[in-house]
Length: 503
Image 1: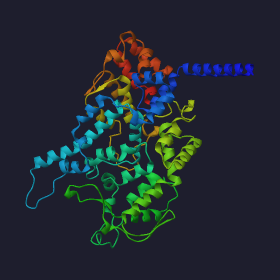
Image 2: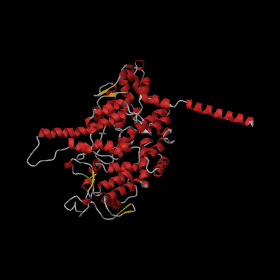
Image 3: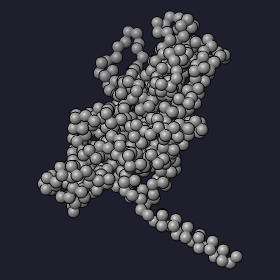
C-alpha cells in the first residue's frame, strides 16, 4: 500500500512538472500576430508584448468579456472633444436638422447653408469617433464586432436625415449588442429611425387603411426584403415572394414621429397598419389588439430561424477565418447559435477557439479592407491621432468612405473587392506619408518607430511593423532603399508591402 501511495505521488509530481513545462513554453510569434490580426485591428508593439506575457487563450477570453476591460483615459477625452457625440437622435434633429418652413418667411441663404454644413459635421464626427475607438480601445474585439455588425446592418448617411442619425444608430442600436443576443440586436436596428428611413418603411402604408387612403405610396416591401435577405435568412434562406409581402404587411405602421415635431424616434402608427391575418414562413400571425406586436413576432421568427443561424455564422466565420470558411466550422458555429438562442459571444468563441482558426491555411488569408489597413498602420507605428479627419479622407480615397455605402449590402470583406492597382497605390501613398509624418493630425515618433541602430536594416524595421516577417521578394525590393539610409521611407514601404496588406 505504501508503494502505491508513493507511486501515486510520483505520478502527480510528473504531471505537475509537465504542466509547468507546458506553461513555460513561449507562445509562437506567428500565433500572437494571427490572433491580433483577427480579434483586433492588427498588432501594436504593446499588444504583442502583452499577449506574449499572458498567452493567447487568456487574451481571447479577455476580449470576449470587454466589459471587464478598462479603457484608456486618452480615448475618453478624445471622444469628449467631439461635440455631436453627446446628443441622441431627437436632440440631433432639433439642433442640426432643417428648420420647419414658415409661410411667408424665408431663411437667409447664409443661415441655411451654415446649418446644412453643421449637419454634415455630425456624420464626420461619427467617422472620427469610429477611427479613434478602433485605434485606441483596449476592447479590440468589441470594435471589430462594431465594424462587422454595422456593415451587416448597413445604413447610408446620404439618405434624408440619416447623416444626423448615423452616429446615434451605431452608438445605441449596434454597439450595446455586438456580443449579446442576435434577437436583441435585430430589434434595436429595425426600430431605429435611421434604418426605418433608409429602407423606406416610413413610406409603407396598408392600402385602404384610415391613415393611408390619400397616400400614393401604399405597401413598400423594401424593408421586409432586406431584413430577410441581408440581415437574417440570407438569399437562399427558404423564403418566397409571398413571405416578403406578408412581412411587409406586418411591418406597416412601423415608422417614426413627425420630424417637424422634433421627435425622430420609433413610433407605431395604427392608422396605417394592415390589420388582416398573415402567414410568414409557415407561421400564422393573427391580427389582434395592437398591430405593433406583429412586427415583434416577425423579428422573433426571423432571429430564431435555422437559416439565420447558418447565414450569420457563415458571415462571422468569413470575417474571422477565411473568405471561404470550412463548412464543418460553419456547421458547428450554426449549431452553437441554435443551442444558445443566438448568443453572439458563444458563436464567436466557437469560431476563434476552433482548430480551423489557427490552422496554417488561415494565416494571412484575408486582405484588409481600407478601414482595417489604415487603423492597423496607425496601430503598428504607434502614431498619435490628434485629429482623425485626414484619416477618414484617406479611407474614402481607397474606396471605403465611412457611412457612405449606398447599397444595403454594405462593403465586401473579401479579397476581390479590394485588390486593385488604384486601391493599392492609395494604400502605399498613405503608408509613406504616415511613416514620414505627413498625415495631418497624426504624428509618428520616428525614433520609436525605427531605432537608430536599425535605420539601414530592413529586417530590423520590419520586425517592428510586420512581426510575421517579409517575403524574399519584398526584402530584395527594400535593400536598395535601405542603402539610402532613409528609415522613414523603408518603414513606409514595409507598411505598403503585400505582407502588411493581409491579416
